[in-house]
Length: 431
Image 1 (cartoon, rainbow, N blue to C red):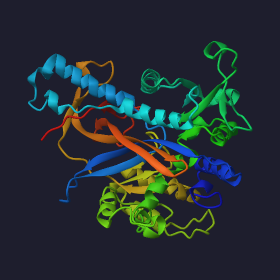
Image 2 (image 1 turned 60 degrees about the horizontal axis):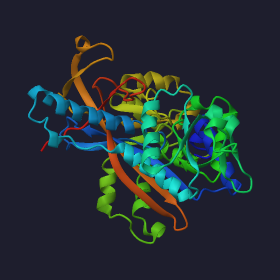
Image 3 (image 1 turned 90 degrees about the horizontal axis):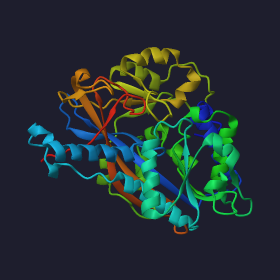
Image 4 (image 1 turned 90 degrees about the vertical axis):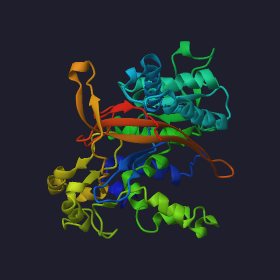
């Protein structure tokens, strides 16, 4: 994804981030530690062809892995309803021992607290970078409360626009400091030091209103505050990276190549198990030489495969959040109008075949039971985890915890909650 070639040359959003990271690298500014709060999303794959039913990965989120707090609250809601009503005896499956605990709030907060501890300035605060007019504030507030109540860590919430005025990096120490109203500051101080920058914004081009907003990202990264995520970790979650990992030998080079690690990290059986969780995917610019001009009007093999298989495909750009993908019958006309220079920013992915015949009632907010619609549904499972990378020993401290379930009508292509395509749900375990 370089500046001269790759996704960055045709996708301005990716390119802007890449160039800021490259500038930091060229200037010798490095981060000792990186924090990732991750969510890996899965769907049940139940093809009619007779293949085995399996969990298949939808995507791996490295930035703004949201709804951790609200997913826990959804699970607690269902536990409460069972305790208070027993669900009126509607199903023998609905019993207390079948409701698994969901402790996502404490898990996410623990990751942030570990980064704060590693920064080792007790009076520093954690910065939540939020969107203007934030609609997902309740999901974020529970983490803020947990950090204060369980870890005695204060949180500062500011948008990228606010940080254009309030953030500065001290030249000698590289400490990131953020100005606050005087009534929120310790006596005599004009700002607070930041230990960890937690980005709940910055994952979409609409968060960067001006070039100054991209420069703000450079400023944050130039400090010694631990980034969650850093630019390179955000880019590693891009769809193009996901597609590249599926190519023959690439995953093996990371997990089982002794020349890279000095020993085999995973057995071939374990590598095959990871690879088996992925659907087939490829780049629309497949078979184009790396040194080809950006605008090459010839139809690539990647585009031809996408046309031929459109009924069973989704096209994905380098974006997070719902509403960005192109599905099935919409693919051929989309390809007809896609400028050749933009093909490199898209991947094609085989659709996961959801199980048939799973029905439930969907109710629109404010509609009451009269608006309930019984329909086939599909549920997506997300597994949360955190990882703190780096330090003198180049180690990785990590933990898996908590889950998210989103349920939607089977005929809905998109799955985002905030985008209005699905609802938060919870798990029930059966033997």
